[in-house]
Length: 256
Image (cartoon, rainbow, N blue to C red):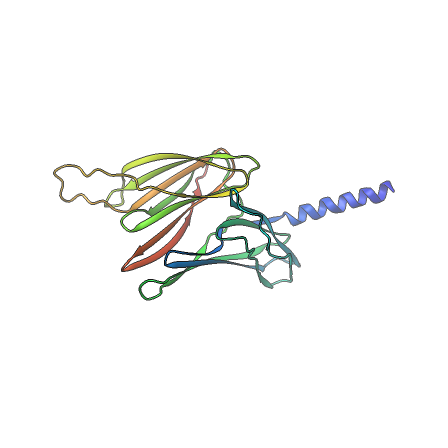
């Protein structure tokens, strides 16, 4: 009897270790309709490993207070070179992980359609990190647009079992995009195992007197750090008569 129990425990431990071997983080996902626009995400995985892959959606991160997700994607078994879409249906905005016991090629696309003008439709492929940004590690979005027709929101994912505090340093470029003319600091608390979507204000700039050539541009930069593991990125949206555009830029950790 003791031998059977021991074998069962060893098999369970081996299965857990193998299944957790490869993790891919989808930083932003969902399907929804906004003012004069709609959006959807799609994650396609391909088994590029030497053996058959068992693939499943792992952790889900939703805004605090959201109802539980009732339509998670099913576990898939993929032979070498086979593909599948791994898209849980969990509402308008969330993040999640994809777990596999074989290496995968993961392509995540976000598609957005605009109903104004000539019905513009844009698609962006997202970077898919394989690990969270470590605690106390600075990450950066080198350039994003906010103001002058652009709106920017900060996306934060907290995978920890406790709240984390995130510090964001926002800077505004000069007109030559070679330096900064102003900056502000903000702090956010992200609840445990959740996603937060925070509207970012423009960094205010006061034009110097007697300088008619001074220009204010929408380009900003972000540096962000947290006291626990995290993912961060910025979503930009332009809804102008002659320009409808959207883009997501993930924060990249700096080497320590």
